[in-house]
Length: 514
Image (cartoon, rainbow, N blue to C red; front, side, top):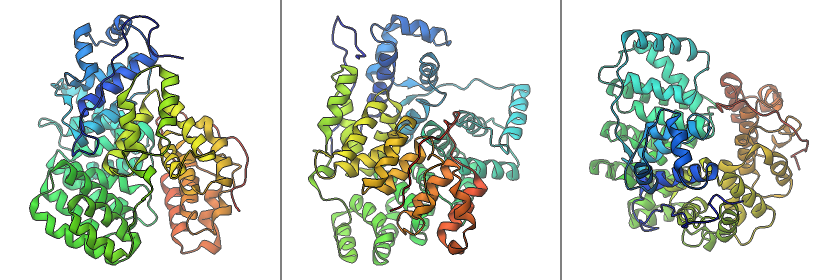
């Protein structure tokens, strides 16, 4: 199979020319790459046919404009990204969520657009529709984006605080258990609310309340979005949360502050407070010390040395295959992608390096999200499964397991279940199964309850999948008062994964205990 025509000039793919270990990336080139690749995989060859497909969606572009957008020479309006989704029959938000995340984290990278005004009749109809659908859990991620767009406009409606509070609580509850484009679109909505003063204050209160609920899961990525704010008050709040929290809340605050450090938006007067919080966290042991180490690495070598001394060891992978310059099994992924696409694609090489290595945590997730939204997803997921079965070199299996938490697809469920029996990466595999559609009902998740490391992941997988064993975790007397049971109760209250697509039925049978 090839995504390029058999004759004519080779297709030039945009790529990120910034240094691999530099302080920044080229977000325009990354967006351009995702658009061009998505087009070529569906409509290979000259762009004429695709331009007609765009016009059928109301997006009128000429060949030169398309070329500038797809090479990164010109910023793309978000309306054009939406037109790509429609023309290529992709789910609404499939590209939009990832592109908005790139823009929020590394941008500005999208072209500004004037908002079409809404009449009083249109606004009233929209508010009435949302008032019904929000409490019913019937909103898509793209619907939430429209809500944030409307209420944060200078001329937008002023919602009663009680309404806005309940809507934001529902948004966060969904964002904490959503996957793929359902996740990226909701997280973008959270980031958009930060732009409005009133909405931002309500958002902070809601984040603390929802993420502090006993047994709550998935709060780290919601809290992390707050780090894209340029408001010193929000960043100060994040420093305080990092200092007083643990678990997912602390990791989320750490990711958010890492984003701020890398973006250069962390105010200098917060650095001393953050440095003290980092050293105190490292003194509390490895659980609180790992996120502290991640931040220390980005602040100073001296602070990093202090953290390592307090922890008593270096808390990060040291294998050569964990480095961004030479990630484990990189050639296997590249070769499989080349066979699939026929493209000379240096951007893929860059994204794979960032995805397979923990050297730049702030880039790793975005690179994986881009690969998950790209036509390469299936072939790369297949390679990751193979690397878990027969790793090419040290660290390859560990990196592959992390890749699968983003790229695994429903068709790989049985392979992932079988790997649970033999692999040492069972925690990540449970996450991958939960994200890949659901854990088949016949899988014995309750059998993992006695393993203190795997039990939380088993409850996560059960909750995301609406698995029959969730009720066992909720009611088993031997788990009474445990964090595992609190997690199960939280899942019982909130519901399973949000996918914005019709879920596939579970299948397969294999016990996981032992």
